[in-house]
Image (cartoon, rainbow, N blue to C red; front, side):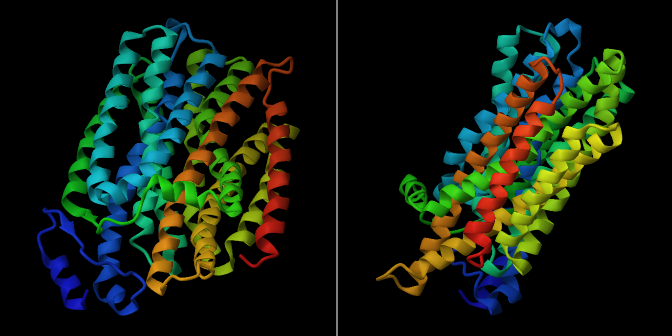
Length: 450
């Protein structure tokens, strides 16, 4: 594709599907002339759609704060309500990874955004009708549709950016999406503080409008890249490499921590305020006032994790993150004061965000190196192989990593159900896991120069 062709396509009306018949972000001249503007426009709307997807995925972390005695749901059941969407979203990330290459990035982003209308409308009904716990659990599972968006979005944006900018671009895409978690929690706070805990349906109504706006914006301003190689065979092929499994495991420690803590933070704070003698209404309000802060800082820190990994190396940043997360978990375990408990929790959010960015930076680096070992392939074929393997692993790692969030919520449920009635046991397990991951990262990736 010539520079003139790219510029001509940019000048065309953005209201039509702008299928770029050729795309080579590694061509510096073409990238500087017009490619980076096209990529930035697609990145912007990818972030918008993914942002709302994360909000819907985490909507039950907010809804549980609105669920008073009239719902007849206990604290243990509330941890299950926030764990189920995590599980569903994790599973959906696998097929969502293949969708952009199969149907087109623009096309699938529109469809995946419109699918969010289902959980938003169902949640509005459930919070109004107050059905049985089993029915509410089914409705909560629908929120998992928002979790799949991450995989398709990352796979799509991975194809738009050159290797030298993937860490920053993928970090920005994921971080902008992750911010959907604190944003819906902040909206929940505003609704509780202004209208009261009986008006959860307002949050759902707001998101029904935002979903429609996102779908329209993606239809107008996003582009489809040419149909690229993407199949279940590529997913299987990527997982034949040991590093694919190791990266997925490390992502359990970073993204699993982020999403697990994001979904559970409000409930943990609610229980802490309740145990201090506050009424249910006051505890819910105070928890809502603080819940959004952790996911917000974790989301903002993710692009910087990718940026630092671009400059220093994904292995070094990731190893340092796990060591720091071990120390932060120690603050939560100590619980010597409310300030240290809260500080430790916030640090875990920030560090998990940094680690999310650095782990994902490792993926294209690893497969670019492995591509050089593929005999009988041209340079172009090696680049396509590396892209296909990287995009596939991003979906698999995202799915496996998100399962860590399920584990966090179930461990917290068990910890609060123990004789101690606190989160101490759960965080002792988390600290041990972070230690193992720090050693694994150092041995496999720091010493080998990744």
